Length: 158
Image 1: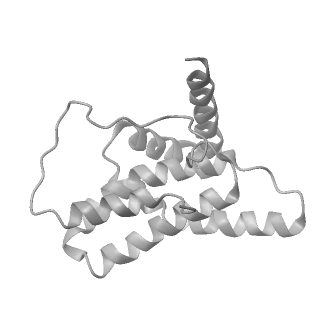
Image 2: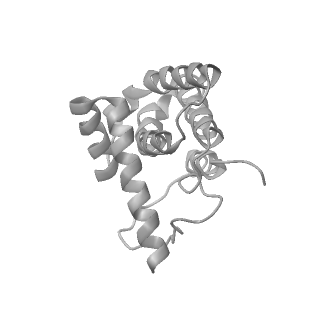
Image 3: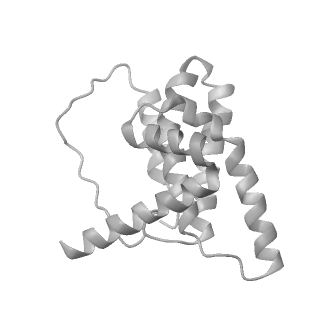
């Protein structure tokens, strides 16, 4: 309780400790969209920092303790990085110089992880990777945030 993005950390740890696993095309996992408390529902900088922290942690671990799984971890993180870009676009604009400075710092940290998009495997992450190459990180974040807003609106109408 009180942690954001904890499921990402849990899933990577779980996968790394499995002796073997299979992938199925059937949907066995139901993810509730537009749920209060989910990272894509909130728009606070805290949501962005939390997800960024988990991604940074696993990039470091992939480069040290789990080097043999580096490519797999990066592929997993590429999707989460794409989510991070969209959520970053949802955060409110800075109202003070201090907030603007913090925002710039956050963008620099996010930009350092852009290499993860080169490991994208799923359609959404590949779309974000393509958009970043064409339009840049900030414009992609703006467009991805509009996509998230539309999905939220559709979820409320159901």
